[in-house]
Image 1 (cartoon, rainbow, N blue to C red):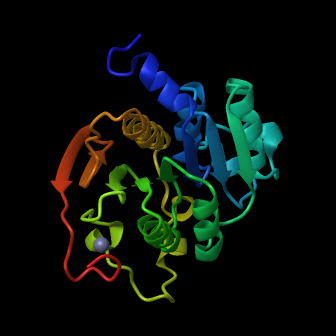
Image 2 (tube, protein in one colour; image 1 turned 45 degrees about the horizontal axis):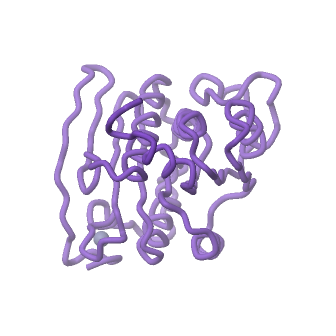
Length: 240
Ligand SMILES: [Zn+2]
């Protein structure tokens, strides 16, 4: 019924293929909204099992899912939401070789980075850029959220490493700073994960999406959004 989407837009959603990496606090709401919107095919990547401590923020899972593979449970939950979506569960962590192979064999319209690991984020950035696929990235720490998208079908697109150059390969900062150790306010993940689904839908139906080449910063305490424009960094180790 929305004039911005219409029948043509709904058909585009129905024939779209989306990859969601990380089915935690961001991936849960993002996947639910994309399944409900009638995305044709969803691929879900997560190597973790459900823990009771996840339920504060990972709204796909219930207490009876404890110790089960997140990707498998998420696929069941999304199929229950919309049986017409073809859902593929990949119960594993995304490494560079595997992700490259998946992206070259599947023609994804957009990738959602819903992980909370900086090393994996840099891998997703490199692989999506090499394969010319659009990506919507997000993270939330405490009360602060970030959202940014890149469309690598455009050769002059900036990338995540233009903004945050990768640290040394041996850093263990991502583990030290993830949601499980720093803490995060659950509804902020709901907002940012929903915003990722929103941006993915806009990119699929061809609407302008605000987070493209724009770092969107959200503060849950004040409910304020700020936006920083990005351009390609000539010294970027990935795209410069
Ligand atoms: Zn770059």
